[in-house]
Image (tube, rainbow over all chains, first blue to last red; front, side, top):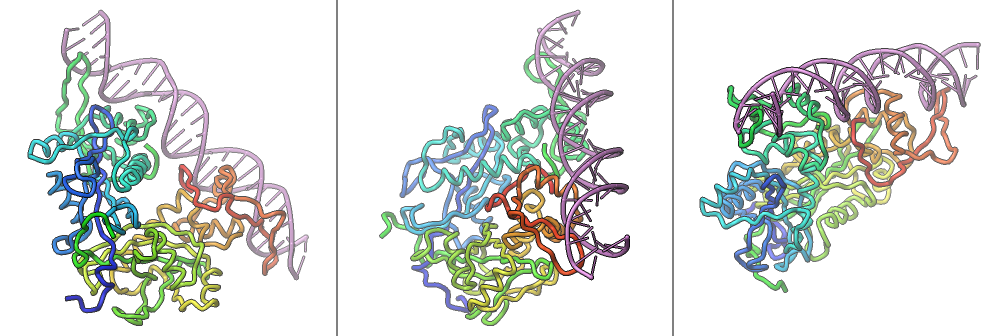
Amino acid sequence: MPAFPAIAPERRPIATVDIVLLTLSEGTLRIGLQRRDREPYDGELALVGGYVRPEIDSDIEASAKRILRDKGRLEGLYLEQLRSFGGPARDPRGWSISIAYLALVPEDVLQAAEAAGAPPFELIDPDRCPALPFDHNLLIDAAMQRLRSKSSYSTLPAFLLPGQFTLPELKAVYEKVMGTALNDSAFRRKLMEMRILEEIDAKSIATSQRRRPAQMYRLANSSLTEFNRMV
Amino acid sequence: MPAFPAIAPERRPIATVDIVLLTLSEGTLRIGLQRRDREPYDGELALVGGYVRPEIDSDIEASAKRILRDKGRLEGLYLEQLRSFGGPARDPRGWSISIAYLALVPEDVLQAAEAAGAPPFELIDPDRCPALPFDHNLLIDAAMQRLRSKSSYSTLPAFLLPGQFTLPELKAVYEKVMGTALNDSAFRRKLMEMRILEEIDAKSIATSQRRRPAQMYRLANSSLTEFNRMV
DNA sequence: TTAATAGTGTCTCTCAGACATTATCAC
DNA sequence: GTGATAATGTCTGAGAGACACTATTAA
């Protein structure tokens, strides 16, 4: 029982969390959407989302993690709050607030989630995204903008890759995300001098065609690292 | 009447907006706090804040602007959403969400607001900030961090100054905010090359001591401008 | 050996920091 | 002129981009 009277419940906005799930599929950035299983917009593609549940959530990030777990069978993703959107018209249920999150997921994790029984994800090209329910297109724009700008000075794009990857793979992800070509030697120099990466013990991997196999790396720091400058 | 049933009102969190009001007083950065005029924490110093009011607010930024206007007689400030904080314990009234905003206000505007009848602001040194109600110290930390990091690549600190200012004044604000000394000629070069500033028509100003008066400038673009690099 | 990609070495050019120099005011 | 601060000019060094060159694999 609260110690002090609060604003009347019927004058409170609805509070939801919506998650912009991004992954890399066939070398291109994709948004992971699911079909809604209830009204409003039952059956339509939309961001993974749900109510903030005061009775079970310890904070907003806990809401986001619960929603990812319950609706997507996803855990341990890179997760970052974007910002909150609110207004009378964005949700037909009434005046609502959505706290938007950005989540990055390696494609293999997404496939494992589906294999474990998660409702299927549809992977949409952000440049060809159809009109979505609510203001989800706005949230996607915010997510893309955040990803693009933060990528230029952090290890953010690495969270779109599996736990281990080659340097050319990592460079390709940066280029996809930022939409610009990067200088090869500068890229290596930067990451090596800053000790961003850790060699995977003597392992390297050979792939299909005849070519030199690349050294495998993982992030030296499993959480996000920011640099002072570009690339 | 909403077209679809929403989560029961009594299961909705409280939704508030809290604004970290920053200004520059006697050359140092200060947080503008006001004494609360109701429970909980009646009479204690806290951030300017209030409920999101679905019946009158068109979105969350409108809530923030209304609260600034009604509680602080402040309008036209630089205003930027920080992020949202939520949880069961941050407010004794119950599980609550606060959407935190950063507002920058020139000291003369703050003084004019008080002269116009706003409840007095107490200006607190962020490095000597006492323990505040709710989780307001966390919100202040978030605001300071945002201001510090964004200052290094944008015109953000200029919004702490009156509409016109000299280049040495602007440089001093950057130095205060970022906590580092800046190179004089590099600072000028950067701002001039990027056409960030506009000379105030032939005006320069003479001050107290015998010294050369400085050229007055204003921001060429009245909204925030971001650079690609430092300083 | 050849094709193909991985990775290195080195030159150059840009740009920020350092700092000396000049300018402009009050007295 | 002198003292003080404003503003400019120029040198230098660090670091990013360009790109040629070497390395390592499969066929």
